[in-house]
Amino acid sequence: MSRIVVVTGGTRGIGAAIAARFRAAGDKVHAPGRADCDVTDEDAVARYFEGLGPVDVLVNNAGISASAPLAKTSLEQWRTQIEVNATGAFLCTRAVLPGMRSRDTGRIVTVASTASHIGYRYTAGYTASKHAAVGLMRATAAELAGTGVTANAVCPAFVRTDMTAASVARIQERTGRDEADAEAALAAASPLGRLLEPDEVAHAVTFFAAPEAAAINGQTLVLDGGGIQS
Image (cartoon, rainbow, N blue to C red; front, side, top):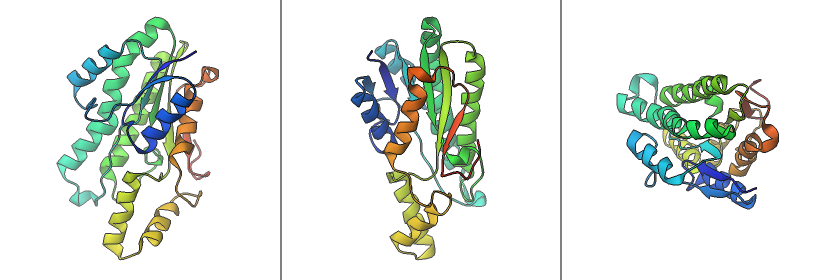
């Protein structure tokens, strides 16, 4: 049966791959970018979801990153990452939860990161925001225990996206490495030894969203080749 699916940040990268997976399965997918729904704006989120009606699956995918040593991280960089990566997930989850609870069915999947489990240098704001996003998911799952609604998170290592391309460019700028060597340095951060492809993350998201995953709640699925045991 076709479901109503919302994938925030769904216009490119991981979000676009997730949206494509759900569409291929016959679901009706809404994949808003920031221009469609600014996930940091409480009123904008409320209006957007009110206009959709019942949502069967929410994928909290909208996210940003910035890289700088902690001492050089600006308050604006910190706040922006917290607002998009954590507060955005909170506002969207809060918007769909009452309807899912009233129907006693629904899936909430948050796209986090391996940075939600461990700390990486030069990513204080990003790491803190992804820890917060997973903490939100776990608290939500605790409230949902025993219902037909679940909340889980997918936590990938570096994925081949525009965001990762920007990280590669920063490594090139700071170290003088060529693009291939800079990408290899990122890939070496996980046992996988390569960048993930967006569709690999999309597959994990659709697994959590499947009807057959009704018994899985409050869990994180780490995609890094086996470095983090979760």
